Length: 90
Image 1: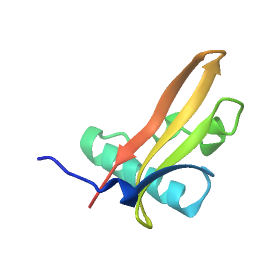
Image 2: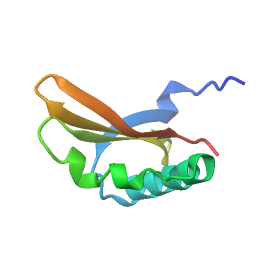
Image 3: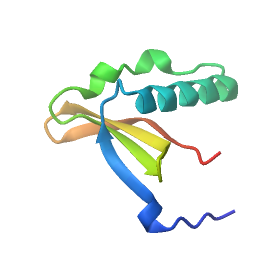
């Protein structure tokens, strides 16, 4: 199945990891991971992890609706990881 999204409706922003949209997206992802793998992975991520130099929390929006997220966590200079990446159009 492919999904075509009209680019003007899709935007990606840096967001506060404690914002309502961010917390809801992470909570939904944790629930999905828990159902799928038996562990929601919530112990491996804290919103504070991305509130450091080189870190960021990203929210994808489809119009006014948050539909995806990703956390970028710096590990050391020039090295980082992507955490809590999720996309849901339902």
